[in-house]
Every structure is written in C-alpha cells, then in structure tokens.
Length: 234
Image (tube, rainbow, N blue to C red; front, side, top):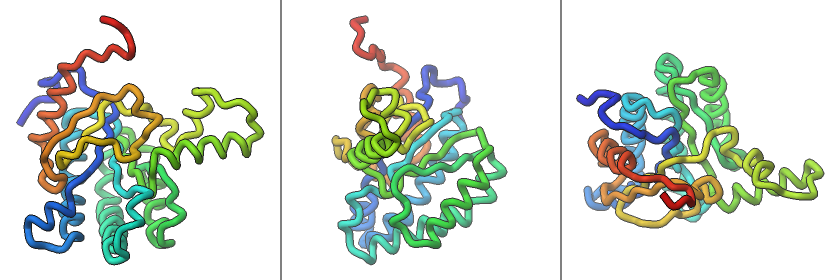
C-alpha cells in the first residue's frame, strides 16, 4: 500500500487509450469479447487506484468512431458489457463520489444504452471525488468538426481558440496533462487531438486487461519526473 503523497507532481487529468483487449483474448484462446470483459474489470481497478492517488479527472477511450468497422457481434458485446457495467455500478459510484460524464455522439447507440448512460450521468452529476469521462463513439477529428459546426449554427463568423475549446465534447473538463496507452502501440489513434497539444505521453507494453495499480503507479512516477516547458526554454 502506498500513501497518496508518495508521488509528487501528479497530473490533474489523465487520458487512457485502452488497447489490447483483443490480443489478450487471443493469447488466452478466448473470443474477443472475453477480452473486453476483462477490460471492463481493468477500468474498475484503475478508477479505484486513481482515487487513491487523488487524480481528479480520467477519460477512458471506450469506443471510437472507427470501432463501428468491427463485427456486429463484437460491437453488440461491447454495448452489452457497457450497459451491464453502468447499471451494476451506479449505486456504488453515487456513494463513492464518482461523477460519470461522456463525450462523443451517443445518439448512434441503442436506445436502452443511451437511457442507462443518461441515468448514471444524472445520478452522479453532483459528485466531486473524481470525474470519470467516457469517450463513446468519439474521434478527435469528429470532435473538432462537431465544435466548428456548433459555432456556425450559433452564427459565429470567426473561430478563436477560446470559442473552439468551449464547443468541444470535453468542455468544461480541463485538457489532459497525461495520456497513457497500453499494448505497446505508440500512436494517438484520433484521441482528443485538440486537447492533447501539450499532454505528456506514456506507452506501456502491458495489455489493457492486465493493467493494474502497480502499472499505474509506474506511469505516474514517470510523469512526476518530467519537466513540462509548454514551449519554453527552461
């Protein structure tokens, strides 16, 4: 067990690109959706660990705009796991001060899943222990296009950084300080392209279903040693 104060200079908002569920399942000789099931367990473990570290915001890249290219069986499995997770954890999250938010176009999801997402967001909206932001049917390019179209519909004729930032799906959350990607892949994959302009990145070979508190602590220790200059020279 570690103390909250054991690592200094922790990030305020962490973005996590959860990668490796399918590969994990293949290595176990299991169907891909078993990897997604274990991935859901990793989400719960990670939330618990983040609370111990007093991290205030985490965004999980849960379903991308590109994930629609997967088989219908796999997509349905992901929807079922997501639905079951938020229904079973709603009361627990309420009691523990966990606020659930989403970003992305959830109108493309089944009606019952949309309903469950709205219920858990409403039930946890006043919580302030940690914000768990779920990126669902989300893509960074689609986010920027959505923001610009919103500004156009409002009659804006000039786009500024401030206007664009306040029109993104993630608003009013702060931009991520730190982005973690599992499975050994070293790319962004269309994740929060505008918001991560000055984020620090951390890539680990650990497959997402195996990710645990020890791996998170290693990542946070790595972040704590970095000198964030934001374009400066020091």
